[in-house]
Image 1 (spheres, rainbow, N blue to C red):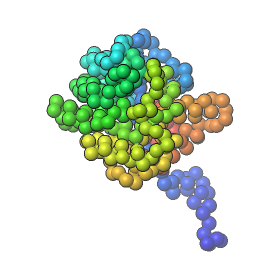
Image 2 (cartoon, helix red, strand yellow; image 1 turned 60 degrees about the vertical axis):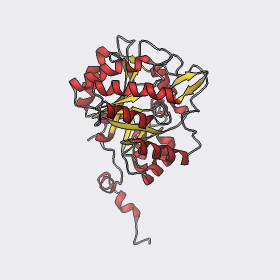
Image 3 (cartoon, rainbow, N blue to C red; image 1 turned 45 degrees about the vertical axis):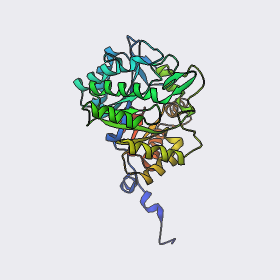
Image 4 (cartoon, helix red, strand yellow; image 1 turned 120 degrees about the vertical axis):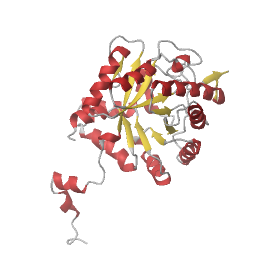
Length: 321
């Protein structure tokens, strides 16, 4: 009790505060999203995400090398195809942008390569599954997901990250991978992916806004947290190696509860809208760049083991290691 107990004693200097800090951002736990667009000849800025770019195949290899030089160890690849159709067939094209980018990454770097598996970027209707009479056919979609997963694994992807939120997707992909000899290819399941308003800038980047309706029949209702635990539990039972909560900062309670209940490595995805809000506030002078570190730290403090963030490159460039 005061005056014998003085909590300020361990806050007196920066080094003292570092000494007793409970949470640290480990660079090896950061994952940088990377966009590959088959339609580009030069890198293109994403207007709603200042500082983030999409890359043509001709340039993505050098960009990946630059990321590794800065200390980035892990990437998550997304693709924008030259051709879209109702089945999203470009997603499993062995000569597709993501497949080629994976091969470049494995040839030129030692990065851990994760590949986002979904259909929204590849379908002409913008939904994450096969549409029949304006309804997403869950089980037909799984067949396509299996083909995409095999295509990514054959290209050399270390981790397949299915994000479509179809029921049974993890089990279906795990079975397809194992039957084709890819027993050691990991699955990072987007287990609790919410139908969030924070995805807008991403949809600009990959041109994936749904052509009709919304994604609330498959992505989670943001009002629910117990449901998220059921989703995670099912993915674990289906064979997920790692689990994820997406978005991050608005869902710290879900991250914390998932950490309390489950032992698997837990990822959080700080999505495009989180990046854009923070970046805009910094550019307009309302906040300084310390807000980036505060946001990142909050996710790890909540219990995440790894963080997918568009600030990963900034962190490696600006924070003393």
